Image (cartoon, rainbow, N blue to C red):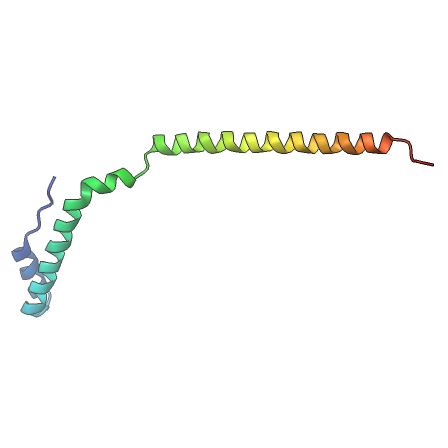
Length: 94
């Protein structure tokens, strides 16, 4: 949907507020260009926005990745403890 902007009304409002006519026209022209540019790219920007479903999916993926890392660390810690206990139970050479 294209945005509409009444440049004449904007110029008149700016002039009524005390802005010089040439400045008011420049402001209105630049604002119109910005609105037109934003309208032209509005459809393409939506692909970069995250929805609640996107965030929920990301949260699930990160949670499972963290669980996997914790399980891996727990297994490594368990192996280290078993190795230390077995090493300590070995008789010392005499």
